Amino acid sequence: MKLNGKTLCKLFISTLYISTFTFGGGFVIVNFMKRKFVDELHWIDEQEMLDITAMAQSAPGAIAVNAAILVGWKVQGFFGMLTAVVGTILPPMVILTVISFFYEKFAANRYVALVLQGMQAGVAAIILDVAWGLGTSVLKSKEWLHYAVLLLAFVSAFVLGVNVIYIILASLAVGILKEALSHKRRCEK
Image (cartoon, rainbow, N blue to C red; front, side):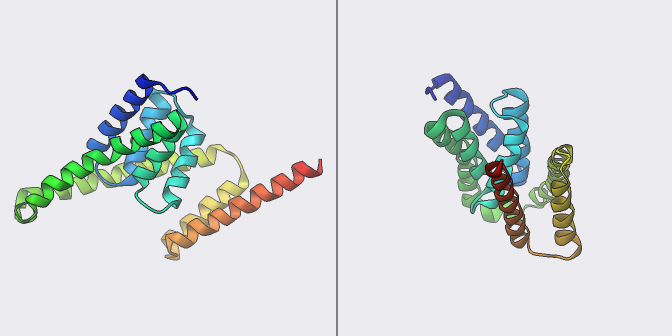
């Protein structure tokens, strides 16, 4: 992969912009990353974005940083990864530094509290949009195993209250088992 300064600059500006204007956590930023890197720039395809989201969610740490690492690596290798991570972490670091100096005044301000309550509703809508988009992509795969994992994960989380870590580990085990069986079948042919 040839290092491209224009691509690195566009990657930095894109991740900086997304991180600066995205509130609500990792799945919100993943939605914006999909729109930018899949729909607009076509650097990665939708299936890769699903894979990146799954890996970013499964790995320890912030999903936004994990996704930036994977997108950056895919686009420009090691330097793309560094560029995307710096672009992603810079805005929260600056914002949190400023907020920490004025925390007491922010926490006691009635208008700030009202703005944050309004943002919670918007963030919930964006997370629902991300879940709908990812779920639709899984349904488009037309594989019964994907349907079963999606349904079982939903029922486990929302009906039975199973810890998400166990759901992720079970889904990981199913994916590994499926791939192992597929590999065995290919080798037998």
